[in-house]
Image (cartoon, rainbow, N blue to C red; front, side, top):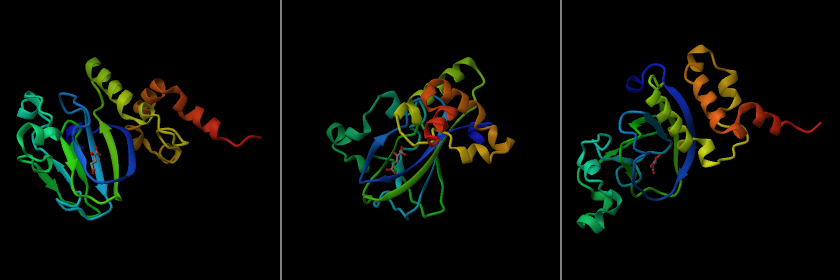
Length: 201
Ligand SMILES: O=C(O)CCC(=O)C(=O)O
């Protein structure tokens, strides 16, 4: 993960069935490279059957979409152009085994897909070096993780097998984000969740 640094934080992942079109959006706006999404789809996807689309350059503050605060998903009303035909959009066609990695700031979407598009993702952030970056990573975890979405998984955010099998090279990416997530969402902390899921004696 060159851009995020060697010591990036692992901040969660998910697996979903996506259904139909996904409108244009970015995964927040952080102003600089704070987080990346690593995505892989288990079905072959082409431009018009649900492949991830993006608008190159929209991760940058000087892109016209950012500067003019254009609501791209509203392009039909604004410019008479259907969102799927927004100029310059690029389809990242994939086959199972391919991996797509993109900056959370980038506008992305998907059009024409079926009702069982299997997508798995992992989200990673920089390891913050300044107080400002630390606050941004906390804010990212406040709004972008299991706790913030109130998802109930039964095992919290960082699953025991992920931690129990981790050597130092993996723990570098887990230790601090686990602490932050536990502070932000104490009810999902690992010891609390494992006590709750323990069988009654
Ligand atoms: O594949 C899709 O429908 C888009 C997924 C997406 O927007 C996302 O993961 O943020």
